[in-house]
Length: 292
Image (cartoon, rainbow, N blue to C red):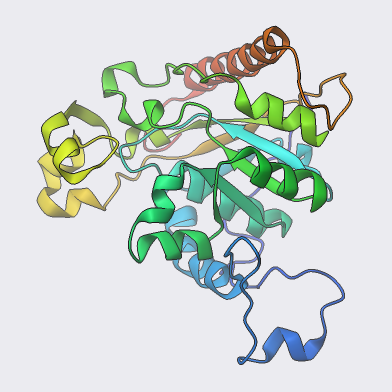
């Protein structure tokens, strides 16, 4: 298997270089009176600021290490699919930061519309590249605009599962991500991630609090037990390893109104199995949660 290991934090060291479309006029790049917010709400300035803040966490705290990064195309659309974990998941920011700094390609994170409804956080989420995970949104990003989109098919079932079930992939819903990729005519790129399960291990759930606060789930984590209130926002420094697997393509014409449900579910399970097998291999190779 051809892989490439990317040194952490080497290109660039701060990750503050804004990502811009080619051909943009110089005055548009630096005129502070112009908005840099695109139709999805993403802001290059906010992403640059986010990269500046998150680079020390990415490079020094999580010490993220990639394999197979060269499998992500330099141009054109592709749907990135990963396993999801940690009570407050760190995997999405790590994937987005790594690809943006190493490959200089923006990544749009597809997630539940619930994030968009949160006061202030919803706006910040959009400015940082979050997009409601609706089929039409994904189609436009992938097919019409030729961009990268990131999705976690486990949904909330991934980060809400207890630590005892770590690295056991939950059901991939109804395979919606496969149907989106088929319709958009783009490959699926599975990304196996280890380290995220140990950043905020879930000890147990408190459904009554979740219901009162109108949250998808309310976990008690090891961080909260050991660090008190700081544990709500401070993850443990588990080492992240990310492996980009072989692209999955579908021998079907794009832009169809319907794709056979059996085929969609079959391909969804194939991607899930690829990720689960890769996770087992990576865990067998790992000697330490903290040092890799």
